Length: 115
Image (cartoon, rainbow, N blue to C red; front, side, top):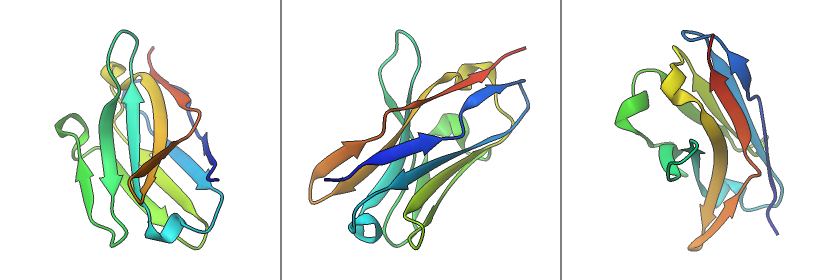
């Protein structure tokens, strides 16, 4: 059983930065694709960024150039560095781990960019 625990969310002024972390249990981390999703009130969950086992990354157009996803296999942790945050980035952010066609999710962490 895989468990994912996110941390690092909070309230930040527009233009500020946050770094989200997601720590995973289990031994499959290094062979798993990882991603960060977000869901704003009244909207569907959407992919923000993903990273493959080889380190290749993809980003949603809305966050390109501002967000960076990275992974540390030794620590079994995936990160999302978020810079130049905008009010429209406000959402609950979820960590995702995908392996053998199975998806695992964290509990979510709230990110709010507001004055």
